[in-house]
Image (cartoon, rainbow, N blue to C red; front, side, top):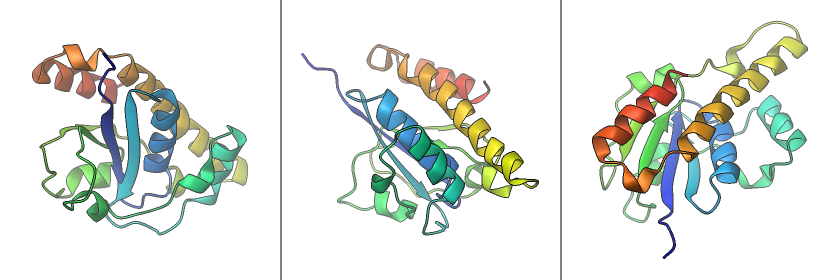
Length: 164
């Protein structure tokens, strides 16, 4: 019997960098087990150029990513979400809509690479660091035996991953 596919939404404020990176990484790493999306409370409307460049260099299909509002995932025709993961402090402190089906939520705070200052190389390094942190956390997440854990154990493990 095929294992269930879990739907995961990565949330951030602008949906231009961290949440897009999370969507990309989980889309690849969790293929066949997880389906990933991203959204923002105040989407910028475009992916940050450095995030796009990094994903292109790592052979992700960047044409499929777009900056969008979390409202797209709160409607009746939206996918039923199993997990909602915030990846920035702003989103964690905002009031989130009530998600149909009460998905499990976790906060994996990552510094905003779009806010990095310095030379171009230093700013691009901030994007690489955000990618590295998300990649490590998503690797831990995808290794969890999700279907065999009770809700409390799973929530505890998700929260621990966010502190990595």
